[in-house]
Length: 340
Image (tube, rainbow, N blue to C red; front, side):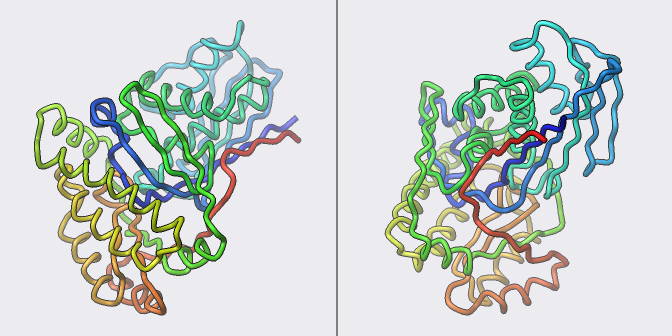
């Protein structure tokens, strides 16, 4: 028997950072994101030799353990081990033997939500194998708890919900820790045009998002007025983006992205740097109306909205920075699991 699962990575178009505590706990947050045809994958194969084997193909790491009810968290494939520990604690009465193999289409630090998407994917494989009674909200919440509470990894709430639900979503984060995912019914014409005009550019650099997120959180704790006001504006940006996409006012999207980028850089240091600023200005000079860094900032992927027929001239102009344009499609589905 082979159990498989996959979940899509996401592009955050607006509101990024307002899903991160303590801002979301104090003021509430809002995000607009959509999932793309880049995935995290997981495969579970039950074993009969009392071994637990964990393979991360993209990291080229392999761990082998005797069957146990707890795997030590020590910096080696901790996401994989943390998920097993929670499954063991919450759903199983005795340890199980298996081989878990994972792969992600984008590297860590890309800004596409890779870590959280991987958690959702692995959880999905366990859910499929063990027939766990988890709905979509349950799955996303459990993934969040494992990553943010059990493993104490810094970050927000949007990625787990995006990977689980898939599609185009307007997400609201409330002060009482409640999350509501509002799937948007966007006309295919609008999505096709958005996909045509939206460049996904890989800077070929990585960054440690936790450091940036911790700085952002500290700015809220320390009542940094400039940073908090920037987050208020990004929450407003999410509403603006939702209305533009639903109404098909696509000419406004570049300006809304540009509006958000101005404020995102005010949330914390290191979100941008001279190289990122130069890439951004070059894209605008060649016809892009606006854009942003994906995820927490500091590196990884960037997106640019290039209206009409400016797409290729922007792509060509960015070649000198050593990155590359990445092809993708939007997806309608989130976590998918199956058994062979």
